[in-house]
Image (cartoon, one colour):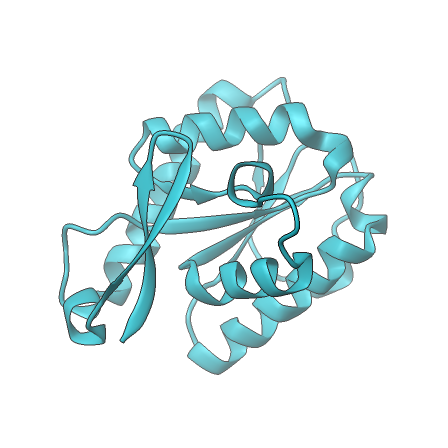
Length: 164
């Protein structure tokens, strides 16, 4: 059995399906883990809301974690089980040990699966981490947010459809 998440109003409800049901399902929506610094909380919540409005299932720690949960276990499980990891790149995130750990797990997943997993999203004028420089990124800074959020959702769906 493969564990998967089914969206509800403010997060996920954990459920299970057979692995074959998941791989053959064209109706399932792509899922994205938002890797970010908590200093960027307001823009990350906006990205979460806007992606959900466009049919993307989003895993955001503040909505998915409960008091007493193991941060390491829950986040590792989310990186493993979601289709994509959106790397929210900012001056704050590039110095965050948590973000670097999440992206390291996601990079290993991408290498092992030989599929796109990490989606770099720049939200301010910061330098892209060296291990992401070769990837195309999208700019969701305030000046271009509205015109690029739909492109991001479209790209996520396209990558997801290429897998199924």
